[in-house]
View 1: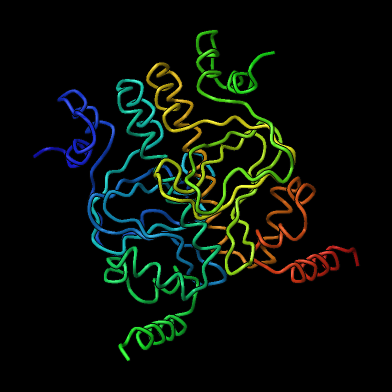
View 2: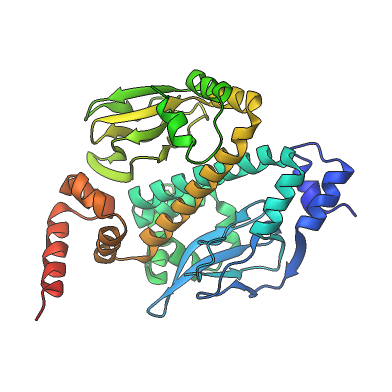
Length: 194
Length: 194
């Protein structure tokens, strides 16, 4: 069976056998059960991930309260904050579903790019896309009210509302679960035809 | 006089005369006075910037209220949200100070990378650094209270508190100017030795 990462990348660039072999050497496709913790606060993040199937949540614990930073799903790269810095991580990464992901490390990435510089363009495109998405997330989070954030999420990412438990959606939107229930009730009244 | 962008990049990589000429062709170093608007909501963002001197603020107007998304200073790349998408922009870019910046476009960037693939590694590093900073900003904004955001900013970026008007700092922290004054008073009492 073709390496899952190579199969994904072949949608975007020409993958010959040499490159496919290099990709298998440079990464490791692994399966993680729902609930698996990929990174704990205080640990040094030595691995980054590229999700092939499933969902990973990034969160912090602040005075015992769980605050969701991000959800990552199929074809999302997961770069832990501080990845490659050697500093202890300030956040957790947890599998919200059974997850299949490609793991890599800064050393493996660097040596793969030296041997296969043709991958640089794909890495650059992926990194720029990631930066663009993050800019948009930050703008939305700053500019929208909790209710607007919910409506925006329901429009842009209806799949997340199906896949993720309510209390985690609430923590992602920056509200308490009771407030999310109120928002949902208000919106369902607003949308009901008169 | 050596091109300012080439001078900056030469800190990070070998710049020969051919590459320096290509950089001058691919970009345009421009001066903008304080208050200049580089991008308006509704316009298509055709240019990105790299700041050599000065400060640029990104903001949205929401029901007449000005919400600051980001400040960009020396050696920061400024990629407007939706840059390269052809969609009208949802935000403004304004020079907070007299600013000197290198402007470029997706077409110029692409043709420069074709002719000078050795620049890809620097672009990748810059893009990864930008994504990492954005992840940290988003995590801070989600996880910290307004008072904690102020303390964090005062520790990490004391220069911004000196350079930026108070009401823009308030809007960046997501509080009203009166609340920022209260936060500053509370912290100055807290820090005063007993």
